[in-house]
Amino acid sequence: MYYGQVTSNTVTVRTAPSARVAKDSHFGKEKIMLVCKVRGESVRGNDIWYKVPIQGVGFVSARYVRNVGNAPRWCTGNRVPVKALVNIPIRKAPLTAAAQVRTVRKGSTITAVCAVPSQQKNGPQWYYLTDGRWISSKHLRQNMPTSPCS
Image (cartoon, rainbow, N blue to C red; front, side, top):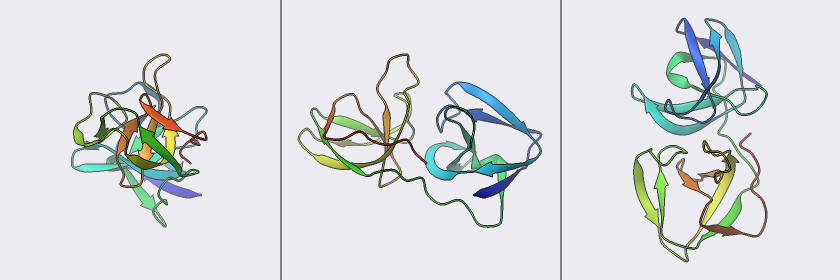
């Protein structure tokens, strides 16, 4: 396990690595456990988010957490090849409002590293890619399920 010290009075736990998604809980100015890290929406120039061990899925912005000891490793999963059924935007964070960085063309195969739940009720999962970006699973075909980011 990895640890971090919250550097602000509180840090909000989010359901995905973005300040625009639902709040789950918060931590005070304390030492917290960190599972792994992903790239997400930038918070004051820092696009790293730490997954925290809470019930459900939780992420905190690295902007407000100082590493205690080694920095967490990158989140991993079971690395599943997925095929685009249509042209699909690749985004900086796992939500449709996040900035688009490029497009995966119909018929292309990419590798999904791990998954986080949708921010919409009954919405598609979001897959974390090997380049630190995100893609919606809505129009992807895969032969096996993608594991949660951990």
